[in-house]
Length: 447
Image 1 (cartoon, rainbow, N blue to C red):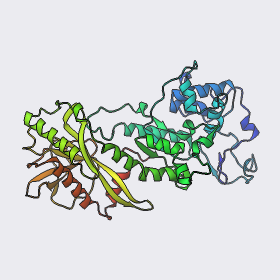
Image 2: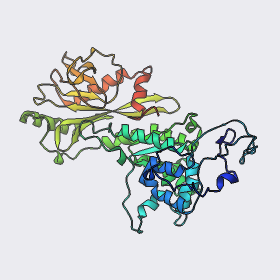
Image 3: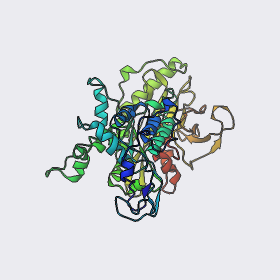
Image 4: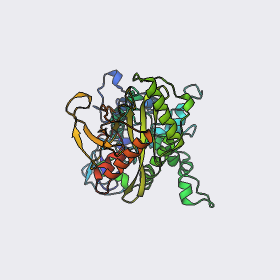
């Protein structure tokens, strides 16, 4: 039971004393207990949801006979009279599972107390003291510690399952990834809770606050990940926390510009192989390499395209940097992704283009494909060279499957530039759906 005034859980003496037959952490699923059926065995419930990562914490809790479970006395007037934290008399409140504040206080800090390091650093040291290799995080988690921890875990589990099926920049080129290998950066476990001031940045007298905050562990982690997930509770407390607001600002302002700059870097053409998944003619291979060289020599501002991998010439990644006005953030550069699939007789036949997002196209004809691989997909036509020669552009989901093209193509620079122009014409300020589609995290779920 959590107080409706101060939102803290009960800490009465009865609840702090362990019961001899129901010590926290002594029963696990392996011993026949169903997941999530015991209110008092919270440590065991955490293990059932998170897996082996918390197995050592549960063991530590069991060794110290630390009672760590939901209050059985339920903060009510007839039993407690008033909240043991804020003094409010029994009244409004609600059932909640333990939050991350309590996870850190009762589980993370005790097990890290001897070495006074972060929980991640503790795991890296290994059971025998040897140094283990760390894991590069995939996703930064923006959240607040007051959310119920089991719900927090379930939310990230759902995110990993959906996100592993929709990897950006590798659409149609890599198999689905095992969601259990998805790595999250979570401040409670990554930062040293015994030296938390070091994670907040360099606030010495000769450093401006703006510079200081960009040296924080949060900014450093944001610069290292590929994407960010914001975890919302039912009260959306995340938007009232200053560090969460900083993280969300950084996502909208910094990460797109970083990703775009990284993608626009020139490729080493000497490593590009002549092989491809599509059986290209010799003329097509020569033409594709010539187009790639031209794009390197004559880059298009805020746009680029290159093979998805050095081993395949026939499938390219493309990106367009779009300037968008976003409330409270001003002008933000957002990278929008698409795929280019070359036919075997290119350039006699146009390549096929599939976007990883949707927008309303107002510059020409559009239709929905009724059959074939693109059944149900919206198709729009672009006049690539302005001479009545049309190229089919498919607004597809991130499966990246695209249709057969039509028409001739003069050069890849003209195609990329035309795609960029068509997208710009579609992205007027009233097109809120496009902006939301472009900026929302891919694969997030309602939970």
